[in-house]
Each structure stands twice: as structure tokens, then as C-alpha cells.
Image (cartoon, rainbow, N blue to C red; front, side, top):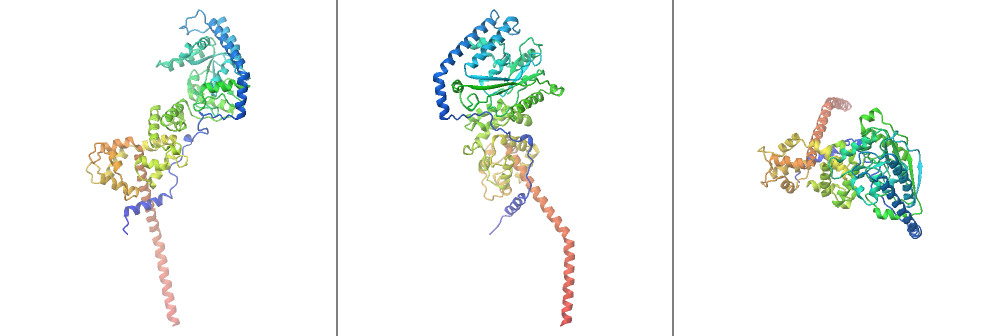
Length: 548
């Protein structure tokens, strides 16, 4: 039987590679978060829960509806009086005198009645700070549309709201009386204008009401605190952290991206006998000099203080993760497949939203739904149009950071950014092209292409026709350097696969050199042993002759 020398060499390389230590140390900064998905809330209702809600709906809900509508109409009436004779476009000046007292005190009392009508029992811990002590109030965790209770017990401060909300009947008048900071979705300068308005109010010396902000920017299931957006911390003024708890046996208030709709949660909540909520005012946080120079540090330190009081971890998820979840759903992937901790990964890898979206679309074309929207070694090999080999397994292991045998989207993004893109340099592409271009004529034929791949992967009968056709853009049966380069730039995994192959060869040569040096070092010792053995044999021979 004839054995191919190339196959023998690659088999030896594979045996040597099994002795290698792990390829890359895992950076602690890329360790997955303790809470993999803070945007999901599952509610399992028992038969007892359903019976209780039916009873409350029949006997208590009608009275609550009457009380709710009464409080709502009175609030609207107070808001209309407080803003009477003031043009709707006049928002640059704060309400003064009786208008401000009417809006704060009367609307505050009616707000408590409003939540009482829905069955809420509110417990307040701590003391609210004045507008001079803390011009900005930051509230977390933000988990439901009921979190507005924090504004009521805080003395009716201004909030950040969409400009469209002011036009909503009845509720719009109430919003207008509280003079919110309005955000316009159609104004391209809205973000800058919003920050300027918050800063103006926070530095007004008490002329404006306090500004209450939910720095997380989206709702979670309260299992952690996600990234704080910097808007509340850009003015660099003291803030008062406010934390919310809902200590109920049955959680009907949490509203997340994966869970019940607003209408269902509202109905289930008002059909409870009582819904408990705790609002705790923490001590005012005054930024240090270092924090004044870095508002991200300021935001993270405030978040850590609030997380310690709540007894929950922090993660670097953000609203953009929710957008990726929706994109994953549209691509028929599980929604949680889009979670990457956008804030952390985007900053460390210098990636924009468009990069993540494109990578997710590409990931969806590779992933296997039967594996929970993940990539296994078979899907990875199929994507690269190559067989499963030792070389491919090693590249797969570089992506598989948690060693669970699959690659999730987070691992895929990190692998492409820190493994493949750096390897995809002009020098690497030129070196690879020269190796494939065996006859040096400036182009690669299919025979040349398959010859090197077969020897490097150790697969004598490898069929690379599909891969070759993908690279041969002009269908000339030859791959030019430009076609080769464009393909590498679009598929950076191949660059890392190639550099991994070169590392294999270098390592194998290094092992062979070590073995040769060891053999050379043993030669004097073997020579001495040979001389000693010869002398012993001669002595034994002489002794035998004498005995004869």
C-alpha cells in the first residue's frame, strides 16, 4: 500500500499539536455576564392565582375603575388650571408661584390616589433631597410602566419624555404641567438639545424642578443593572439615586421585551388584592474630580452603589442589545441570540451598530436552529466549505470561548474582531497567494489551489471546487490576486485559518529541531557507552580463552 508523504507529515503535525498548550489566554474583560438575558420575564400562573384574579376582577375592579377615572379627571383639571393662559410653545421658562405649587402638590396627591386605585401599597425608605442638593434624580432598575410611582413620591419632578406624549388627550395636559424635557424623534439634533436642556435645568440653582431620569433607558427584569446612559451625568452635578423594589409573590408588573403585553400586565395587576412597591432614596452622590473628568466613570460608580444596595450584579447590556434581539427574531433566530453586551463589546472592539447588524445577518446564515441558534463544528466547516480537520478544529476552538462545543453570536463577533481581522493583513494575503501560486505565473489554478489545501488539511481526496468557484469571480478558471484579496477581505476566517496552518508548520519544525539537538547531545554519551561495551566484550572473551 502506497502512503502519501504529505499525509504522513500532517499526521505527525496533528500528533504534535495535541501536546500543545491552550492557544490563547481568555481576556477577563470578555467573560460572559452573570445574567445572560435581563430582557425576559416568564410568569407562570397557578390555578389559585387565576381564581384570585377572577374574584378580584368581579368584586374589586369596578370600584378601582371609578376611583381611577375620578383621579384622572381631577388631575387633568388641575393641570389645565396650572397651565392656563400659558402658550403651548412657551416651555423655556419654569412655572412659578401658585402654578408650580398647584402642579407639584395637588398632582402629587392625586398621583398617590391614582396608584391606590390600582391596588398599589407604597413604602418609602429614606428622604428625598432638595433641588439644590441634587438637581437630578436617577432611578433604577427600570422594569415597568408603573415605575412612574418614583416621580410621585419624589415631589413631581420633571421627566424626559417623547414630544408626542404632550399631544395625547388628557395625559398630555398632565405631562405639560410637569414641564418634561421633550425628546423629538424627527429632529436630528434632538439628542444634543436634550442634553443641553437637562444641563440648563440642573445648573439653574433651583429655578427649575428636579429632573428624574431612568439611566438604563429600557426595561429589564430587575435581575441586574444594565449600562447607564450618560445623559443624567453629563451636567456633572450631584445626583440622588433612587432604587425600586416590587416585593410580591406574584410578579405581574415586570414588562420586558420577551413577556406579556402592556394590556395583559395592567389587567393582571389591577386584579390583585395588593401590589407592594418600595421606593428607597439613597444618599446624594457628589462626583469626585476624577468623575468630573470622565462622566462614564461617574455613571458606572453610581450604578455600582445602587447595585450594592439592591444586591444584584451589573452587566453591560444596553438598549442596542434589545434592537439586536429584534433583528435576531426577524432572522428566525431565538431573540436571546442577539445579546452581546453591546456597550462593552462595541467600545473594546471599536464596532458600530451597523457592524453588529451585518455580522448578525451573516451569523444567521450559518447557525443551526436545532442547536438553539448556535454554530457547531459541522456548520462551521460547511460555511467554510472545508472538511472537519485538526486545523479547522483548532480555529473553531479559538472562537468557542466557553468550550461548550458551539459558537454563539457574542463569541462569533469577538472571534472575527480579535482573531480574524488582525490576521487579514496585506502581508498575510500576499504570502498566502504566493504559496498557492505554485508556478509563480500570477494566478492560481484549481489544481494549485486543491494541492495546497489537500496537503495542509491532510485530506487527499478533498473536493474544493465550490470554494474555488466562489473565489473565481470572473469565472476564468483562474484566481487573480485581486479576486483572492477581495475574497479574503470578505471572509476573514480564511486568513486566520491560513496563519494557524503556518503556526502549525513552524511549531512542527521547532519540534524537529529540538529532537535533532537532543540526538546530537546524546551522540558523545552513546559513543562512550559503545567503547565501554566493546572493552567488556574483549575482557570476557580473553577470560573464556584462559578457561579453555
